Amino acid sequence: MKNRFPRWAFGLLAIGLLILVPYIYLQPTKTQSRDAAAQLPVKGAHVDHRDIVKGVFKTGQDVTRACLECHKDAAAELMKTTHWTWESKAFKVPWRKEPITIGKINQINNFCIGAQGNENKCMTCHAGYGWEAGKAAQQSKAENVDCLACHADPSSYGKGLFGNPAPSVDLLAAARSVRATTRENCGKCHFDGGGGNGVKHGDLDESLYFPGRNLDVHMGGKHNLQCSDCHVTRKHQILGRTMADNYTVDPAEQVSCEQCHKAKIHKDERIASHLKSVACQTCHIPAIAREEPTKVTWDWSKAGQKGREDDHYTYLKIKGEFSYESNYAPTYLWFNGNNEYRYLLGDPINRKGPTYINKPAGAITDPKAKIFPFKVHVAKQPFDKVNGYLLQPVTAGKNGFWTNFDWNQAFELAVPITGLAYSGQYDFAETTMYWASTHMVQAADAALQCDACHSAVGKPGRMDWAALGYAGDPIKWGGRKLP
Image (tube, rainbow, N blue to C red; front, side):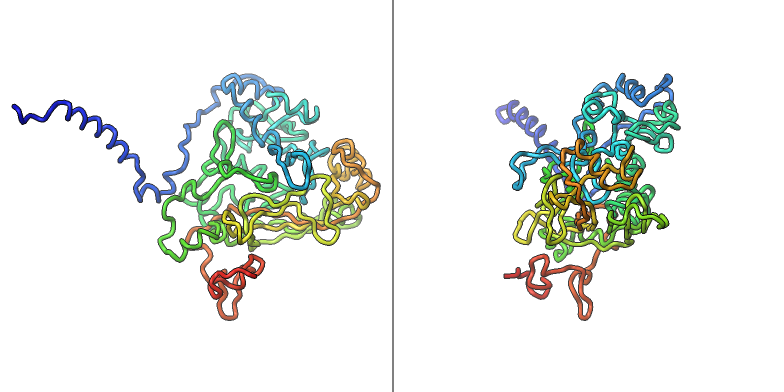
């Protein structure tokens, strides 16, 4: 009996096992960590609303009030997001004394130029109703949240003027069709951003509604990922920020490949060594606009001309002259996820060359920067010859440019809306805007190979090594920087 194992030791062993076994079990193995699909968010089951939604709805606000009976916090959550405000947090930028916000609500781009004064048309892509009442009244009311924009079957719902439902919409049918968001919901705005299919981004267009694997390895084929699989959403806050409407972006708010692709991604050490300085997108997005062309130039100075025939890809009287490209090969820049500069309404233009609407931040000396692919959009847009800044015209609606084709009137109408003075003299300036390419991702067998970037005899690669800060092709020059 003296040799019996003491009871307290059994107790201690049991406690140790209770702690140790779950700890070991929960540690990711090499197999688990390499399984990208296992990292995808788990989503709740959809509840069919056909037998739940009752009543007659006369307005979009009526639908929202019905939604809030069950989803009590939904509107309050959405109203805290940039999908609602169209405005970033306030940034302190080196060239302004006071912090300033950036977003579609108050800033300028080189596509449709700006939303201010053009809410009757621009807000067809806003998740809200009632913009005819003005920004302050619209933004303050929870009932103006448009639940249907993101949750109704797009075949049952469409938006008209000032963000309100189109007159032809059967609101009861649309409300009964609600579901978890799909690519069709997101794509209605994001595939057609900038005024039409494929216009703005180049890596987002209507070909991604139902893509094959060879167009996007994530959204096509067996994976069939929805936007929210990467743009993870909690309480209506959607992961992912565009550099067009921000100055700096918190990495915690950004989508990254590493959300799913963890541990050792490449077995080949030669490829793995590139990850310190080359973004995944650089190799895995060799081209954008693969099936639908994307707009690369936009000349507003040609708008309003008489006698020209409208053609979606070359000229529209209301918008001017364009050019599009298919299978667009990106431009490569160092990028750390932020902007070095973002043009703000009222900033001076560059009279000696192109004015940058935004400029990606990063350099070869920046440890956080990687070589990243971009679409470049070049425009000619109006500026004030006396005050020396870009002008925001009223294009849509009563007496707007699209009605009278009178630039002076369009600029004068904008003055009380934007607060930006107009001298009465205008001209057109060249501007440049960058869009990071992150979609139309190719599988390993279709990614760029070594000779795509590193030149072979008689075949230069696609990288401009000098512009990136190298003395030459790093494979020959050992990665030496320019002096």
